[in-house]
Length: 109
Image (spheres, rainbow, N blue to C red):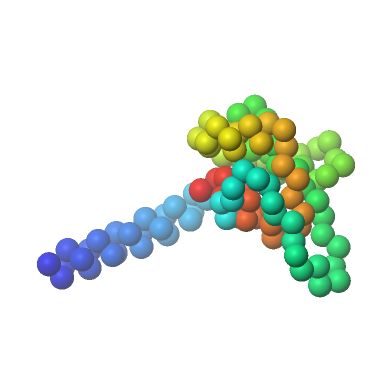
């Protein structure tokens, strides 16, 4: 029994390590479709605003006010719940890079 539990633990750790190799370069934590990622702490630095959108079936990030994509992910919108996909069609505004990373991890995990 101990061997099975130990082997299961090793397999789970190996799976986690392998999945991290295939994660998008700029990933962040999964979040709800409300798009409420505004930072409550500003500690004197200016934060950039980003827009997360669905384009051609994938999640794309733009810096607010720019036309060129800041980041194109390999995350398919079709893998998301319908509500999240609808919000992404309209575009979700994110304040700050840390919040952007959390949002992308949420949608891409």
